[in-house]
Length: 203
Ligand code: GRF
Image 1 (tube, rainbow, N blue to C red):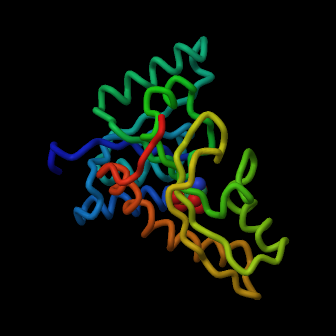
Image 2 (cartoon, rainbow, N blue to C red):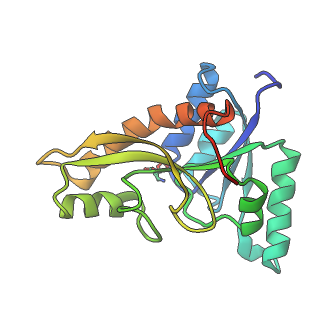
């Protein structure tokens, strides 16, 4: 892997299929970044297995293990710096990032969300909850969305959103599968655009 590429850290809490898609995109040189670190709040997250198999350093970050938010934030920031992390990609990470990290990486943190924002976002609106709400509302389309991360769940500006059709016989599982396929193709492309400076920011 070329050392001139910017470094990214991918944060996961679960299965990590988006992480896998990024690992694959990095392997085929489609992703113009080096995944130098995977962070998880869960030591048993399958995403960590995927990371280790790909030879990527892992860090389990449990903020409650530290005596203060400051201490936890300093530790995480230290690990990110140690791994030369320039960008952060949240991929199924279910915790809010410490404010200090959001500040330090302002406009360099992305999240991928399995629905349209802001309608199907916010605290508690993740994974199957999103797809169930979309089905309950009788929507005929949903979305895979990549947005900037700030201090509030799913509030940051949407950078790209791809529409995904909802079928009349969809369950939350079949819908999740269709959305995930789009997510896997979308995320590395948005990361590349961000790295290339294709988005304008006011702050
Ligand atoms: C994805 O649907 C993503 O949009 C959301 O959480 C899910 C994570 O799936 N933030 P995976 O762990 O990448 O398979």
